[in-house]
Image (cartoon, rainbow, N blue to C red; front, side, top):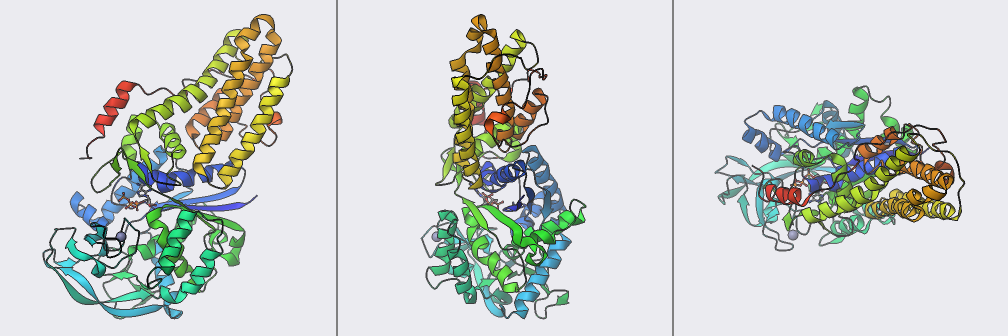
Length: 570
Ligand SMILES: Nc1ncnc2c1ncn2[C@@H]1O[C@H](COP(=O)(O)OP(=O)(O)OP(=O)(O)O)[C@@H](O)[C@H]1O
Ligand SMILES: [Zn+2]
């Protein structure tokens, strides 16, 4: 049994996430966690809300609430929606937790002791109209690297370059739009990443199996221009983790907080501590400390492309720089973007479908299936209502749902509600089993490699194989002349329903549970030998005809939803 530590990029707290956020991080992480559990491995799957920084302050101000209260409420909201999507986190933590405060301050002290922190008096942008320093994300301007006009102060969303606000051409305040900005001097801590470039380069180079999207972004920031830059890790803000050196004050840094991108990845570790402190686990160090057995752990991270520089460079610099035996990530699965119907999903502009709205329209499995089978892996992908309707109606209703319904109803009408006796496998059954054997092993290969679209396509092919078998064997016709053969065919098909439930669980967990319940079995063991797995439900085993597993989306519904979600969220 292997041990898998799995983390999803932690969703930011300033609102409910959209379907792009979901498919770019939490959902594929859940798919992988469910798959590894299904294979019998030990899994620790962690996620949390990312709660610090100015956008949280501003969202709280807009909601008319103190920021701590706003974050606590929004955390609950996000947790509830995550349950609705069946995201199977072992713990959904908070980056504002006391555990993360302590750990972040601890890392800062270690980095300082290692000579990796430098105090710099620097010039920051002060907005007179807003009466405050403007944090990176609240300054926009033209990217000096690619010319994109809406580059943010910390990063250009177009070319992904990490930026400093002072680099921007024609900067303006995002809060007020004011261009009356003036540079003022303030003292900050810098993490001397540039000195770790060689070490980081060697580490990235050793990851030959990583997705090209991940390594290409990492290498770009290691090598482009003057190479990896030192990174400011503190901010002039009220809300955040106070700058301290472990437990001790940090002279000259009073009233400042750590930069949200410094403390957010540390929450991956603190979240495991929260998991233990919440009484859900006994030992977090065996997952995170190589001196406590974490060398055996395989650690996989999931995220959208804009998060890659922080996970391939900044967070590893924190871990390596600490000189302590923390677990480093083994594999980073990154995603391109999902776009919405001819444009981009946007939280700030309320454009697209948001997770709470999606669940009002249809249950989680419909969304999970579409999003995962269209995951933006090799390029950006686009959500359209036509494609969603087509994919749901074809894959889920016509292929899987129809198979379940035909088999169970036919059996009930001809043999009653139990697995019928009689007949023996012939060539057609042997061929089906051989085909499924190949396909299931291919499916496992894609899931192990986290090739999400390929895995979905193979799973669909496994469903199709059952349908084609049924069409070809035609037990409703066979029944008239050879009822024993028809019984054998249906016995096989009922077992296929159980097999489908097991294989499909990572994608569509609710349907999977429904099918196992209908087949009156709790045996959800991952199939080794397919021939043997297809004999699990033996003669006389009872079953029930399940309610409609997946219904079709009508043209009227599609048109209605298209219109409802065409504008922006109020
Ligand atoms: N359109 C998208 N498609 C796929 N992944 C995305 C998309 N937008 C954001 N992500 C990913 O979603 C995860 C959570 O993002 P986060 O909560 O930080 O919001 P964000 O990146 O600020 O996006 P937005 O401003 O659109 O909400 C991150 O891993 C991010 O890379
Ligand atoms: Zn750019």
